[in-house]
Length: 342
Image (tube, rainbow, N blue to C red; front, side):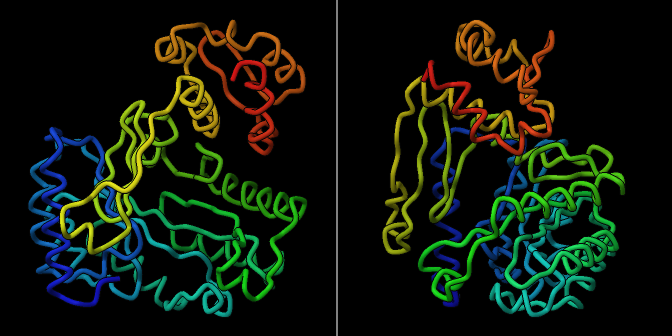
């Protein structure tokens, strides 16, 4: 989070300069995230909102990530006025001790009040995220968390298993990551609870009511082009993948690019399968053939048949998709599918 107002405004203006350097004038989806964008003041938001509002059309999905500590009704009304139509809140859990362990500064009360405020302003599409496999959170507490999430009555819930990385707070503390068996049990509890309450799992980690899927995130899962702008942002313009610099000094000097790579055709194919098979609907066979210039069934004839027989993949006349068990073993499925081809 930037704390110097001058640097913050300089950064916003440099983001706009980077945006203007690309030849794209209208976007189908816009997502402002990367931590705590809601921490910007109203005056810092204005140039960004003005620039992006001119780059949307009537059906553009425009999402802003918010945290509860810095989101105000004034900011939400400003977002709504400029055309923002989706909010994403990092709820994570209602367990107060777990929130402290995650270094979150909001409370369960803040969650309820923040979502109510967003609804009062008029936002109909709200995404919240749930983290499971948290240390010292029992199965009963997970169920209480789910019950609290459902009471918020929003149309989109993202669920993520906690991972422990070296050098993080949990890694330093020696917290052990949940076993695959425990994590699988937690996931199945989440799946059963949410689907019984009218949520559809349209992607491995994402559940939505009434078809309120996140169009922006589906861009990633469909392996489509997307543009990343700002410090540390990542973009993908087939077959080039790039990540901006994470150095504020370099970025403010106009040296935006950090790393980039050209994906080989085999790398593109692997990522296409890994990402598309995360979705309930999988991918169209015609889309695969158009992208890679060969029929999917012929490209993976031998390995595909074995995975179908194991009831991990389904191929019908239109598409290929993973079964429930196939989604649970997706890394294995894609590696097995492609091992003789890629």
